[in-house]
Image (cartoon, rainbow, N blue to C red):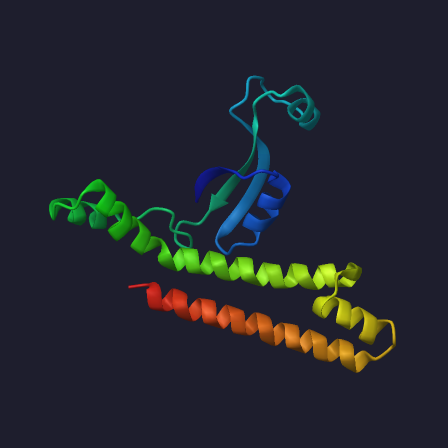
Length: 169
């Protein structure tokens, strides 16, 4: 297991999101890089202690690879590629599958969030299922909406996985 500390605004949402990623064993919230020791939430919020809301993530490096093979970087350097070239030709190229997977997860989350917004009056598929299925006791409308959502998410996941596999060399 390896450990990484990530700061990303509201740490509760970051912790929840990171905890859903396969390969993440444990997450823990806390504060980092401030002027006081062991601050409370109220101190950080009201007194401007300079702390960043941080998430400690334990992950299995066999499942999540955060580092690029050192051999690929050394090979690029031995061919005389500039540091900027290494960034674009090695780091970015090696990162594309992860970027695609992250975009896929984000898009699926957006679908889920729009459904939830619809449930509270925002329209969309969630609003449709609530208004025409639940409130009018038309179970078939609710079931069809759920099936459409499952198919939609499966299609998005399939497309994302396809392109992530294609980008992996």
